[in-house]
Length: 185
Image (cartoon, rainbow, N blue to C red):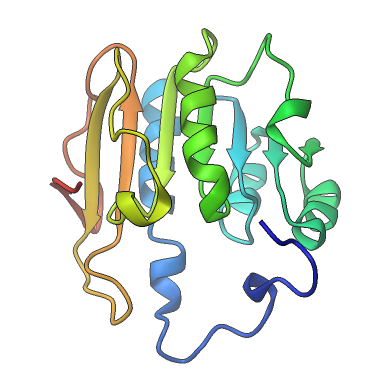
């Protein structure tokens, strides 16, 4: 990935992008935190919505961010910030992992999280487009996936999807405000 120059995520969001679609994962994250009592999160890809949401909820936030400008932002808004997956400790990892980083970082993040003995819940955003993000598989061996599709249609996507993966079976909730269970991939 070429991380030189300005990151398009920092520029003005085009008018055709519905801002609600950029935070469509927040109700799912809320449900996971409330259902499973997570107090720490490792996010792959920081952001104005997820990172600040986690901090506002009192969670300890660690971030892996591969873009220099976002990494600098993360250092001021998270408890721990890493420039690559290689810097993340392999023990005592937060039990919640949220994946919403660069296209190139998503498949390695999913593989890393699925192998960690510490991780109980993986939430990945933009689950409606697994092939374009290079997901190696939608539910790694030993994990159960439930995908929630945002009920509102957005002009730039075919239904925003956020997936919840659990080691010990599906989450105890089958619907989340503004979303319905769906199948993608």
